[in-house]
Image (tube, rainbow, N blue to C red; front, side, top):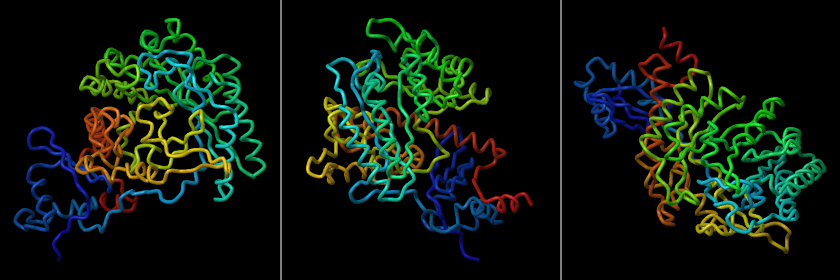
Length: 461
């Protein structure tokens, strides 16, 4: 019989004394081993197999069943983009104006004269993705309203652009799926229109009224919780699909679990995503929220959510996903600034962004009516996929977090284009580790492996 051959990229994560988490992300397999097992795997990695270390072959057989040895070559999720972009989805950054002055706003929305997108800019982007979708024989297009302000403040262009998209798409035999980000400061008329016209929204809301009112404040200085809660109740009454994005500043970390409890107890949102506040924009010189305290608070909030049968997420920990892209930034994201400039990043949403030139890769082409793309810049953005990251090469979470937010890394590292990590990296690893251990526990406590059904039956037999 041939000696066993390592067939998986494996990572060893130290735990308590003589216990190690052994993780093969591309096999979706993990187990807890001791130092002897770690040494056995290290030898296999060097092409060495000692029968004395595995006299009955049980270790090799166990690893074989997890596809860690003798399973052939792994396939990494290296989905890359080439050639001129042909998007069938457009994000419209309608305005930098906002009806709140959140203390941690990454875009400092409302601090300067607002940039407003003319309807013609939105129409050009819509026409472009419709032409691409028709040429690719797709069923439809997607429109997302986002940006460095509150999209609903530019209400007329929001509603008229969607009306235009539906008419043009129908003429081409296509459908339109539309969604938006919002701070929830909506009138009843706006809520009714959203329910009738959008497929979903991501609503920013920080939980307990005292948390919401401390940091998500009106221009006058008053709180926003009562108005936003009214919007959420209206969404609930209509059975509308919305998710909640909760941002946690350093001072609100102790309230995180209670805030998530508050949301799940009082509203019918499908999911809550929790993120520590980024030290950029208005929060640039504020206390860091990317701390051990955040990790501990998130664990407690997640424990309560699981007990209640609710879904609590954090964007950098997603063991159920194998990908080389953290977000659409490295996937030819087609987002339009108010002046028509093409950006790859939702946070590079204004010409005032100090690092915008890294993310802005296109301009309207007045000759063709479409766009001119800077392919050198676009190809640089494409190469921010995690397989190209030297910093991420040895990280066990790399195929799950996929390198995390590149825009944040650029800001944290003073504009340096080479990814060098951020404080979120530690959070990503710790919470990813939690998810792996949870899967091991849910699978019986010995190992986790997402295997074909007949393979499970073979083991049970």
